[in-house]
Image (cartoon, rainbow, N blue to C red):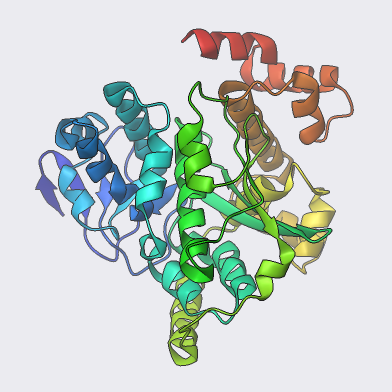
Length: 367
């Protein structure tokens, strides 16, 4: 290992997480990412966005505990918690409440690395978005996409799942923003979604959102989603190369099959995208994974966690994000998390945090 400006960088191929209290950052890796880590990818656009707003990026990046030279290569890997700190600082230094959208607007399909290239050479739009939903974990172990189709409408949804994270609304703005760019690359520059859903309080100035999405934008939603007609899934992608697609699929499968991936983290990813819209008992998840319920319990026990503990961890994460970043009423949050009444949610939240949801929201807004 070598020291660079006080930041310890792991050698290529080493995806171990850093020790507590340090600002260790793994360099580009040929292995499966550790949970809670991401390739810079879209976030590489933070540097030119800061410069565009008249702010020197290097002091801001150092203040977040990162080496500015990491941003020279989108394949470098950083902790998601550090990215959250960086977005918080960027908003504070620029005074721009829609900083994440500016970052996503600058990014492209190539910002998603191997997954973006696989999307570019998929046969149809449906194949491309399914490739995104199935494989983004090789580029990002913190933001989780999911795809649902109902009544002729598609929702391409993003969620985050690390417990300790800040500026989630900025990160999701960036994710949804670049997704529209990607779909316009694949479908044509005139493509537009039916609407965009964002889990954040509506900003005073919504003009940039309307300009970028070219569609209605709904704030204070439970998730970050792009909504578009299901017929778009059948659109053919011009210039797709079947041989290159097969090579990319093989490489991604090798990465996903790396023994370093953690089963409990895979369960977290599943729960983060399903808790607010599907049945999520242990039996349901076991069936989804085509394994016996006892097998699921045994594999989770090997990691030191039970299913109930993980599901409550994710419920707490979702609740905190909605309380902090939106004005969604408590009753709606309770229903989204599977509670039959708001009082049951309040009791659970008090067990998790030591405070009622109302008190936690008020304290967060004050801070």
